[in-house]
Image (cartoon, rainbow, N blue to C red; front, side, top):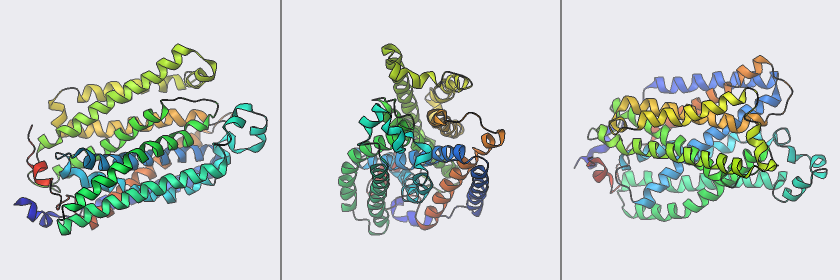
Length: 396
């Protein structure tokens, strides 16, 4: 069977991929260092934006990785190693979180005892919003993500050699445990690192909103990589454009889900018209933020919705590549809209505003390099998975 000969298909990605990753990382890191010299206050928020972007790709991919096992999906098996590689960003987050933990006082008002002492709302929230507990939660979440990534990927890669079907059963059990852990830790992360930037505000749907964005980020990254790798001949030759259909369908589904959740959050707060809730949206409806708020509707919903609406679009490699990159860009705009209005300063220099794009550039470099080094060590196809042949036989 073709499945038994898949090891010979293992190809290393071209060196140009590594060079691209290094160039983006170095340029972003150097300009990022300059941005801290120009305006450290503004720079740490830009760094937070890029960190959260990497979190969504890593943990969104890890969730998709686990979801395949729990759901028993077959169509996605030929592409699973791609999301597995993106999920390997999880351990890297342990290193990237350090600058943020060293700047908690700069990012968060609630981290200042004198501010909490004069604010009854923050006093009520202080058992949760305090620096020691915050650090424990953050490190604990990243360690849990890293642990589940290690357990799942270890079994998946071990199966390439052993062809042991019991490893699939083990990963199903691990994934079933991970799903509720994912829900709790992702919600906690969204509350800690984004919602608590403005600690007087709250939204009970915020975690679901962040989940929708994370799924889109993971799916878009996986879709773009899958299409490019398929076009370049790095995946199994039995795969055709038809195999991309479910990826396109999931992207379309979660674009609609994100739009539904985003509108629901706005509509409920607008309808209730409570001052303690509406100020958050009002701050994003003033000055230049009104243009980003309106653009978000077009960029994050209408454009990808139109691109992916038809069935032929969901199997068209060119459209899928465009849609995937567009969604990743839109997701970055969404995170910018969520985080950056919380920056408290009277004015910013033009240079600091330009340099804020350094950290997203470095983040893209990190993603490329992590994927590249994984592809050098492991097969891009999970050759030992018992569901692989059924996935290769998928037809619309």
